Image (cartoon, rainbow, N blue to C red):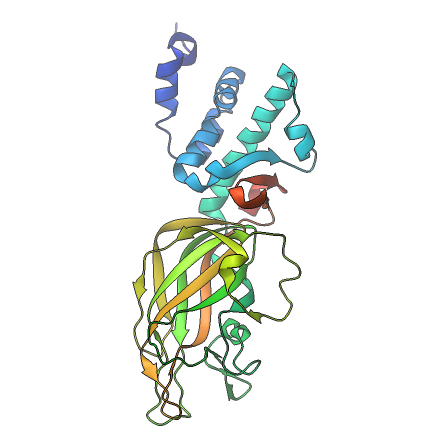
Length: 314
């Protein structure tokens, strides 16, 4: 007669945690929680899906609480909670972190820019606006299409371009930038930067409609940067250059800044150095409409909003 045994009932808690902690794929933990009631209780009560998600994506350690359409922040933070309410909270977090980890890996890989917010300077606005960088290529309607900085005598003066991403939470893997080649100038100079660096973060205060006119502005007084990439060299070439991040970065707050560091091309007519960009792409996985984020001030903490739990959206 075959003897069946549930090892969770026989092993001590620490050993069971070590065994299930070896699972590295979120769907595996979801399947484990479906084996039996006791296994489901063990996975949920010990927050195994949350632990795995935080190991994979440490940026989510800044989650203050998890809410969904049927549970607002007041209910999620209810003081003096009963065991029932605590169990409901654990179940909500189990579901949220399980789908969150899967979404970070399986959501469609696509363009992540929603709109341009600001440039540190613009030489001839609106003809050379940052919004031109949203258009593919370096021509639009038969005319050159690009953003241009103001000219500088000092080649070390940097420039920044700031963009609003397509979702509150995006997993960004690469950024592509095409420097502009001025075919209408003698010798067709290319106004690239020496190098680039990328910052991601969130607004200090709620933003209005991002589809308004982009501004010439310094971004540091309006945004909090929670990630800064290594510096990447940029080639003085008229091509869409790929800058792959060392590892996927979870941008929470939906703001990306491109820092253009150093100038290489002097304009003949005025003797000043410029940086010009024809096109920018940001590639990754937007996590909307399944998830949203509400930032809680300068601390970087945020409320994770579970807006849609449909696994088929992954």
